[in-house]
Length: 394
Image 1 (cartoon, rainbow, N blue to C red):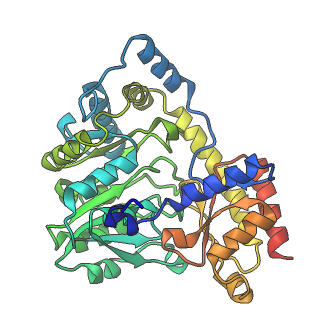
Image 2 (cartoon, helix red, strand yellow):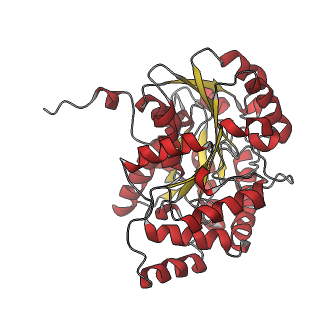
């Protein structure tokens, strides 16, 4: 038997991909399955972006690029940050990676030593804790339930910080909850972090434009510019431009840290796919109406999903403020049905009896909840909600 590295015992496969794989297997076997588990836009990549990729192929842009990305793309990212976020960077402060996921992985590998603590608010994206564990760090999970709108308070953050705290990860709009930190809430968190100058902040802004709070998008650097020098701002193409399979992410931050992350990347994947870089260049510099149109569609679907989930017995659900997720709390339903037990069994019930694939909230550090993705057609969502209602009221 092959003896695997010890680190492999500390992590698990991505639960969202596991659900997606299982749903697709059931579909391939002839099952009538509605898959609302994976976090992937159902829209096609806009045509002008695909055209740019095709042109890059025709023009022969098929060779290696600098590890950090082609200069024209990094300049476009600098312009995007200035235009959309009022943040001023130079191309040397930008690293282009194979998805926002690799940006975050590179950052954690470049920063975290064994025993270092990384504060992660829950609900969290499933990969954050395991990335920390792979670096032999210690994830410190701060739980915020639905009655806190799934957002941590400044008091929680202050109490969690220790001399071992090296990083804090924030994600807003949030996957899986769909909730958004306000400028005031971020400013409160920032006041805590200002007192701890050795802590690096990573803000995962991948859902930045998928927002309908009525207020402009803000991250913690917008709320507190004094944190600029020690904040990594992560973003990418997957959600905003429906480019999940293209694998394109980027990160901005301190030059020394970005250089360290680029060194890490140079020994793993080297440059991001060259064709994808030219596609991303077109995405950032082209007409942004496609992003607005997709966001408007998600908002309309959110209303349908929220109204449908409110009908479910024993469910408590907040209207999402962004992303394309809803995270209803099913604790009351589970307490009324002790035979089901927990959210993992509830997700299994809905998959096998209703034919609806969802992700149990335990995967996101939010037991008693389930995540539903409404990156699907209105017809599909209505069908899924009716199926769920029929099973839950039976």
